[in-house]
Image (cartoon, rainbow over all chains, first blue to last red):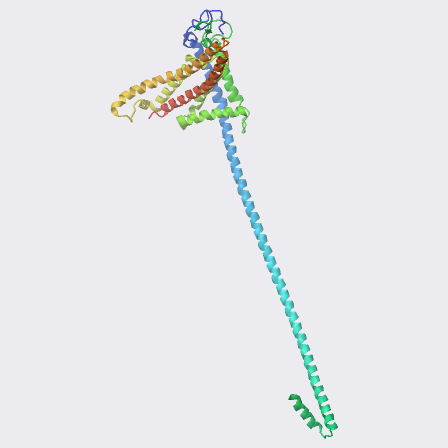
Length: 181
Length: 249
């Protein structure tokens, strides 16, 4: 660094090119230093205040805006999802209720039909059994009549065979009394 | 300052690195000569533009690395102004940010070997320090009128003590720009001079490893100091500005 050959550069630099005292205190250089410093400061200030700082402020504001928007959108989607879930649950419970309804209705219909069929069958059975009853009672009546006739005939025959003499009226009265008895 | 070391012919020129000289030719340094200091100031300006303008040119919502650094610097100083000085001081943010960017880049560029460190010069830091001092004082009187003098009249102290305190406050107020500027220049100058001294010892083979280790350690320390001094200068500017805007204690 100490390669300067001239001592004419400044009173603050010795003939061998090294500093005399503190270079910081060399008044010869100060106007130059202040001049270039002010140039540099003004340049930095202009660049920063005109270009860089507004730009960064915009970028930061935009980012903040984007973040706020995204959070709002996420919130929106979340509520939408919750709504969709609610709707789905509602549809599900509705469908369940409907199914329950349909099952109950079908059951009731089936029951009604069954009841009707049972009633019809009962009625038919009742009619049939009444008919049978009637037929049986007829048969029984005819059987009783036949028995009476056979008994009377047999009684008359027996009486005759035994050598008795009996008229029909007496015999039938006797048989009737016996049958009731 | 050529310091002959004891015996071994060691020659230290720790202050030579601060010599201002023309980049082109050997002439005297006039007012407008393009000097090595002007060159490194220009490089600082270029670096600021590269970081803050070119780095943010994409205006990306998802920032690139360099854009995040720019945004980080912006947020760091913006928050400092807001927290220390108050929300009404945000309009002075560009000035404070200019100071911070200039000092931090000058300090870091000065750590490049064979570079020149503008912030080690009293002429530079005094302009910065007195600039802040004058701006803050003028602003204080413009904003508060004579009420700005209330800064020196400690109303919470007993009446008998107030004149004495006023004198102390007044002296401390006028010492501010001096300490403000010498703190920065002194730190940077001392650090660089120490680096040079350690480098001088590397000429002795036996001590060279130790010397290089020392340079490494001091260099790391200087990186830290470079940032911290920029931070300190900026936050003190904010504190002084707060005094001007709200002079009541």
